[in-house]
Image (cartoon, rainbow, N blue to C red):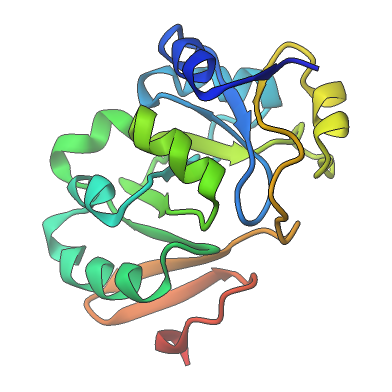
Length: 193
């Protein structure tokens, strides 16, 4: 296994390679936004499927949100983050270079994980996906992930803090005050009901 500390993880990310790290839901594979193609390569992921931008604090992600959706973003984010909720929202006009979606939206999340937040505070926001080969159920153990991704460094210390092992809830902003469910997960969003 290729277990590294935060300092080595940061150096690895700056070199353009991804890191695998724990979150409160499923383990994630992440990279700096300018190197997003690397995750598609490692995961064998369809390039039409967007990635999620994770941050350590709401203020680190606000600049990625389109002006038209900022108020709704702040209301939902302050209520449910950190936690197992991914918010898909129109992207800011000046952040379209970091998008991996074709519809000018971006998925944002702040995980409720000490290790993930510690890494994200050092790196800034990372583009992420679950740490599995696309089309296959991924492992939630470090040993299993190391077998699936032998060339990717894994953030320690080990053992990781306990996670749910379930995917995050995903909601989509349609218009002011109007959110839609994309995927049910652990978080129940009262604004949808």
